[in-house]
Image 1 (spheres, rainbow, N blue to C red):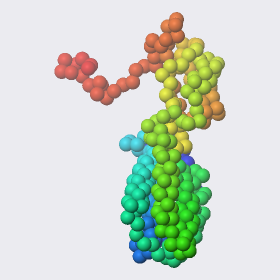
Image 2 (cartoon, helix red, strand yellow):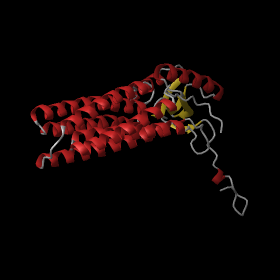
Image 3 (tube, rainbow, N blue to C red):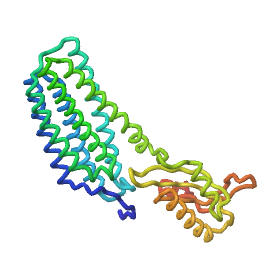
Image 4 (tube, one colour):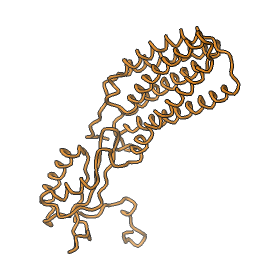
Length: 318
């Protein structure tokens, strides 16, 4: 199926994203091994956060590939919402990881275990360098995609978490303060949950077709009613097709009951929508109104449905 839709893709290449994934997976393996050997829950917490970032970027990579597919008979607007689905999966995973770490830290407060300081400090230092490197790799794409932005924010928080783990390891070395490891774990898990809850509302709103965050319903209605040739407007719906594209549909009551004039009116209305509200896709239908301004009949003929196109045995249309 041909499509006139314009897709917006960030400049982050698949290759750069794949490298970031590979680095984070390798780091996760090293951190888990070091965490088990040293007994540091904080190091394991940081490792799981890194693993969630690697999974996030892996899903983002897959979603990017799916989102590039052109519109077809199944997905007539295209596949770009795949990235929103990926974001929802990643946010859910973050909430689960954060909750698990929080519960594990609380249980260790009750039954503390010994922690070796040097492995914690060394591995967390390596993790800090890799987290910063990964954040630099995906920074450009973060400006264009909610999904990549989530991965970028996670890597920045990973870097902060690594700093916290280094501090905890240092306190264990100097003062044998094992509780510092648990406090860092609580801080990491809390911040993971905080970040996930910050991304969740917008992701859900986009998937549910809510009004775009920076638009006001009443402002759009007022602007369209103020357009020359528009008597009134009814059945207005505005939603995001994906993170970057918006769509609108509405019934317009024109001042002139003339279909040719209505074509010119649609052009003026679409210009208002494009310039003032950045709406690229607008479906506008004309209506005839009664004296009160309420719509009574659509000017254009009703839609034909294939199911109603047949005839019964008597030859009459269904």
